[in-house]
Structure formats: structure tokens, C-alpha cells
Length: 103
Image 1 (cartoon, rainbow, N blue to C red):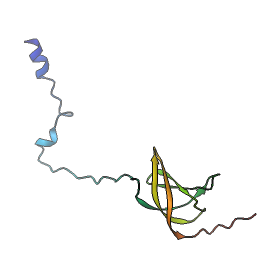
Image 2 (image 1 turned 45 degrees about the vertical axis):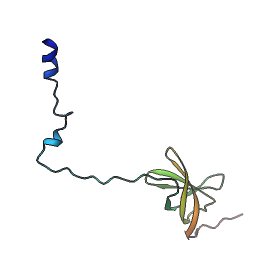
Image 3 (image 1 turned 135 degrees about the vertical axis):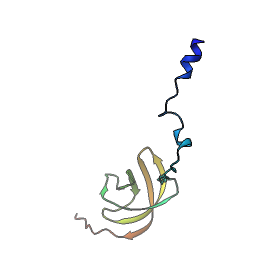
Image 4 (image 1 turned 135 degrees about the horizontal axis):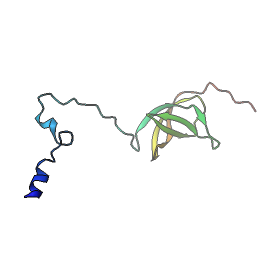
């Protein structure tokens, strides 16, 4: 009998499905689509690493684009995703770099 009483009062309004009984409609929050392999993105290269890869950011992730020049705007296809780093290759150059390199 004591076990029955202990379970009877464990109902918590904050963890149960209160929304099912609500008179108010649910608000639909738009979901952000994640990045997928093969997807094309448009990025502006803001930095270049020592291997000659362009570095940019897209939706909070670091994008590394192979053979990209500093300051250029490119359309790139995602090749690999590792954690918060996205590797991509150039499919189209939208705007060439304004930076001139001196020897």
C-alpha cells in the first residue's frame, strides 16, 4: 500500500505532456538544415593557411576550401565534414580576389 501512495504523487506538470491538454496551438519553430556532403555553398575567403587553402565560415562552422585565393567569393561543394570543420572544393568562382601578392 505504501508503494502505491509513493507513485501516486509523482506527477510533475513540467515533465509531463501538458501541451497535449493545452488550448493554445503549438508554435512551429523553423529548423535550420544542417550541412550535407555534396551540398553547394557560397563563401567569401577571409584567410589562407600555410597549405594554400582558403578559410571562411558558414553558419558557425569553419569552411576550408582547397586552392582558394584570399578575398575571392566562390561557390564550393562540400567534400567532407569533421566536427565543426567543413572541407570543400571550388565549383565556380563568382568574384576574383582584389588582393595582389608581392614577391
